[in-house]
Amino acid sequence: MKMRFWLFLPALLLFHRLPAQALSGVSSRWSDSFVEWEIYVQPEKARDEEEPPKEEVYGEMKLRWLNVREDWSEWDFELGGGRGTIKRRWKDDPSQWELRTYEGVVITMRIAWTGDFTEWRVTDNSVTLNLKSRWTNQFDEWLVQDSNRGRFYMYTMRSQDPRDWTIEDGLDETVSDPMRLALIFLTVYNSTPRR
Image (tube, rainbow, N blue to C red; front, top):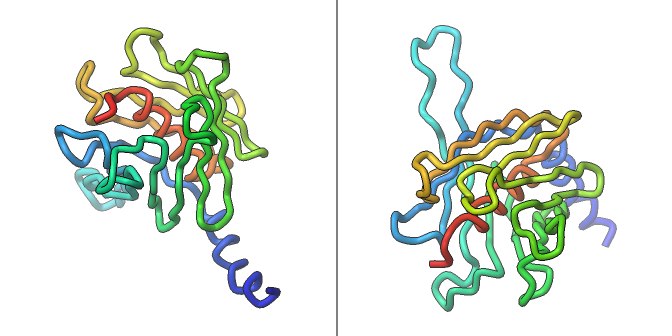
């Protein structure tokens, strides 16, 4: 048992110590389905380059039971080399979710107010962020505004078209990639039709 722990420890420390990437966008993989998503980063421009480099795929998330049935309560993800799952805490309750990495990180996501899916609290028990939809009747814009940790803003590239999102990621390095992914997941999950 002790040997397994020592083999696992370097991977865990590496995942926690790597600075989070500034994410730049998320897009549905298919134009007619919302079951698979690609997550992008904008690499920094080198000093000698005229134009900024093109966005690169940094990760993905997709329904776990994609080929068996459309069960929207379980998702798998890969982000920056880390992998894990996103699941409803209870199958019949969409107001509570857990993101778990295979390295042991757990992020909990809950609605802030009973019955209101426009505001969420996201925490890893050391950092807590509030994610809000800008509007209550249209879910094209979502925002985290935290005086200590910065700003995270997601909006659709085209009005009322939830297939492509731009991310303005101004969160500081204390916010991990799994926390950022939880924000992305809640935004796209709550803004897209279940198909």
